Image (cartoon, rainbow, N blue to C red; front, side, top):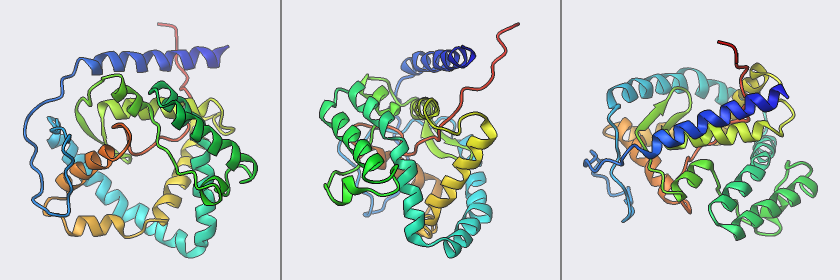
Length: 266
């Protein structure tokens, strides 16, 4: 009963954020794009509303130092100890856990066929793929991974981005996408087996993060090295990545999140 009340409270906060977000207009100010031919700006690319740029730059620097001083060294050492195939298995497992949430989001967006494909991928990989450790749906049946986030759902419903944010540890986002990512994490937390406490969830998410970075070593440094202004480059890259999806939405996903304990007494 208490867990239901906590979940309802979190969902209420999410709905409140959505209402606030819906009232935030998408600004038409011209962003400071990098003049780089390698950037392919889509025709429907929207101007970036970044009124918190001074704060975001501080957070970008914090994340940059965190990656260079902590995450990258740990991920590099991890990659030397754990074979690539095993790291891919771990990545497959966590991705498969998110498929039910993606399927629901696709359905909420009116993408019925995509919702069915995502659910089919989940059923195939959870059985023939041994709880998602392998990806027979993609490798044998050629069923591509289909994104489906709550941020995309909000976009489909006409909710604007809101302000651009650089979230500590998590990186680039927007108010809408951050709200959606938290909602997706809460939803996954309702059926994942380790959602009893925040410390366990954080440890598992940290391990998952290191595992994912170990599969993409060097990419961050490569993009940063060719950028005149890394902050602008990563900000633009984030929005361009979102534009490539079926609908704009968060590129990164939150881990399963257990609704926190809330004191209902004043």
